Length: 109
Image (cartoon, rainbow, N blue to C red; front, side, top):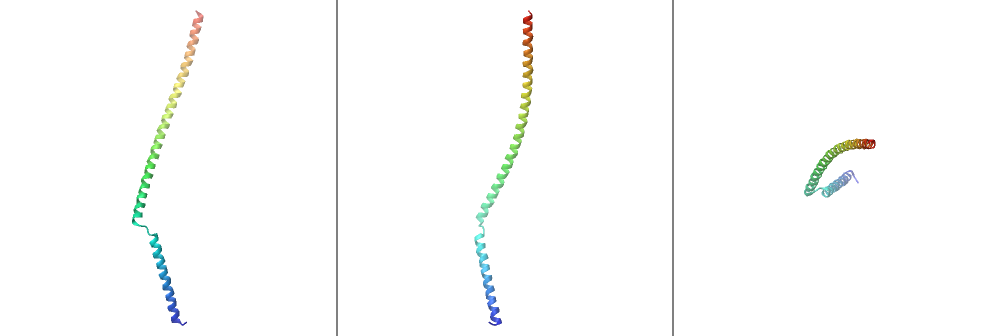
């Protein structure tokens, strides 16, 4: 094999390798390529996900506000209950004192 034949064989081998690489690239690109309808569907799904996240954020904000309101209302109700219990305790004590006074007055007569 002389020098010219060696160059020709090497050129043919390199051309075949190039052709196989190009064909493999074309084949992979053909199978991996995303269709336009699929892209539209992906865009719709992304938009729906974005809207769902916004709705979730709004719901979380509403729940936090509602929880703060309910906590405040519970604290007010507990304060009112405590005041009412104190008033009831004072009224019972006063009623007991009045009964004792009435019994003493009746026994004194």
